[in-house]
Length: 416
Picture 1 (spheres, one colour):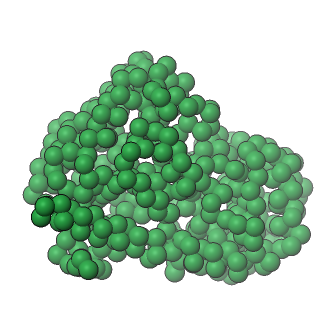
Picture 2 (spheres, rainbow, N blue to C red):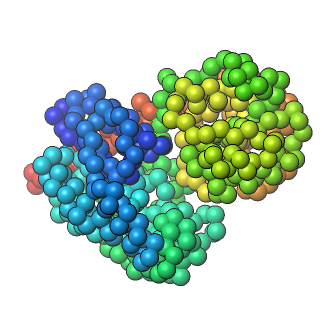
Picture 3 (cartoon, rainbow, N blue to C red):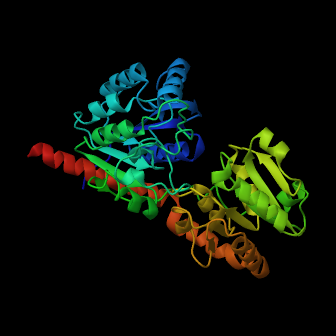
């Protein structure tokens, strides 16, 4: 058995301990430190307090220049040269045993420089894919518009003005070819899709020949727990209402905001839609039938919202494996989701319902069925599913096991 102690993990992500991906990296770092490892997290922006040692990549000027290169020339991931070279100096000084990539897009890294180093560094690399940017010529998601150019080679990108937005050039064909060259150059790369849906997509991309291992996202099931709903319902002045909750870090049409608005016009007054994560401008433009709440990083407050809800509704039109579904389940709240990406993988027939995209009648029917049975009919099964399948201890232990396998394989190959 390989011993974990005295090993070093370096993770790289856009943000540090913020948003779903940042919190996942933070939890993995905490886990390896409990096993005696040292943990470093390198990030581009938005740091929050971390138990790992944080490494800032670049400056605000570097990010601004990267944004400009993206907007004008569609060169996302190809600026930040100085910042990436400085990161590599830090990596060489740290000498990590495992490098774990998360989101490497987001205006802070140069992928050519980074992967030129990784391809020769003789260090096992794990890359968790939270979206599809790694194998397209431009976009991070393509499901919304049904584009499949990424399978054979991107060109004339129909989402050029979507993130990462380019207002002038379309470089998607060259971006695709460069990504294929860079991302298939590492001899010890393991790609980790966060859902089986994403695994199937990756197997159709130029990453299909890499080692692929699915690991679901995990959540803290000791923090996301069912709470008494009455206090929050009273605070929101929603006593007696059947609450339909939506949560997102960024609300737009792809997250289902327009479908929530449509739904609010079709439901009668016994139902109340509550949306968490809205900007001030979005809150001001919402119809009076929807209660809008600003984004919160306060987990206790978020747990109260989940617990107060009778249904968690996720009409996302583009997603890989949303952690909001898992958080709702852990709080004992049944989930209704569109048949989008990996979102349906979070639930089964005893914990929620899956509806085809855009099917308003289907949404209303699902809401009414759950209303008829009552939240209490589903709650214990929801909580049990979250604890059994999505606790961070179990899911992130899979990363620890993967690290162990890679280190053992790496040592074996080195001996040979």
